[in-house]
Amino acid sequence: MIVDNALYRNGERVDLGLDTHDLAGVRAKASGEHDFVWVGLHDPDTDELAAVADLYDLHELAVEDALSAHQRPKVERYADSLFIVLKSLWYVDAEDAVETGEISIFVGHRFVVTVRHGSGGGLSDARHRLEEASAVLAHGPSAVVYAVCDAVVDDYSRIAFAVEEDIEEVEQRVFSPDRSNEAARIYNLKREVIEFRRAVRPLVEPADKLATGQVGRVHEHLQPFFRDVADHAVRVSEQVDGFDDLLGSVLNANLAQVAVQQNSDMRRISAWVAIVAVPTMIAGVYGMNFVHMPELGWTFGYPFALVLMAVIVGALWAFFKKSGWL
Image (cartoon, rainbow, N blue to C red):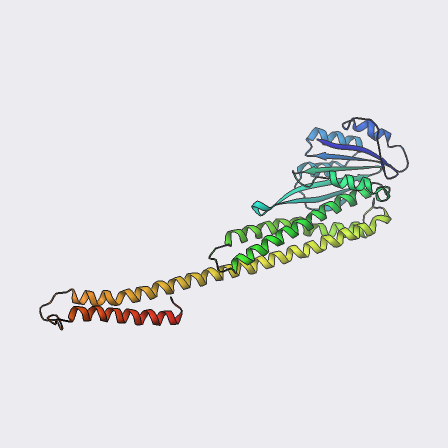
């Protein structure tokens, strides 16, 4: 659906009194030298996107990519326009899950079209912040590109902080005295970090292109802003790489802890088996009831057997306790 459709002039939003869905009406009002239109779409169907594509003469290949929403982050140039793809992310802390969406941006002469897929990564806050920064907004459509990229990368930073907290929690549980196997959660976090990395790492190169002016449609005064975005993208990418390495180490440590616990359990079991085996053996011998057996007719034979069992069991218990098996 069409979320917003607004005309901007000299860094200010112009109230036209037109319906949001009046694409042609808003487009027709962008007649000034510094006027441009920002159209925001969320999960549009084929007809909605086709209507926007016809009005703004969007390239068919870019439109196809924006509709399918399964692209890597990239910047592509089509004739006199730019097509930018970003991955939006949001974190579900209860499930340790990184959910992904996609944002496609079409940038051309006096217009910007953003196409968002997924329930997260809303751009309304980015639009409001940009409208409050009229000095930045006055630089035209590239200001919108900056605002969207900045919002997406800021979300990456927040998600990185949340993931880092979960990794620290898992790390503490692995090395705590409580017996627990965190392998399933570690594996799940590792899988989500891979998903995170797929969104962040490919963004580094497009962000650098925007920051260094390697593509058109970017106002030169906004290049320092894009450099800041690129720097944050690189930093988050390095964080995510570190998460993957750390989770690998934590997983190995968890497996080692489990192996140590299992070995300790086996030692305890073996020690008790040895302790129980001694009285069982003595009782088994004396239970054969042969006529000619040593001490069978002795008055103190029965108490002697019990005392012998107790002494041997006690000696074995003390030995295993001192060895750390019990």
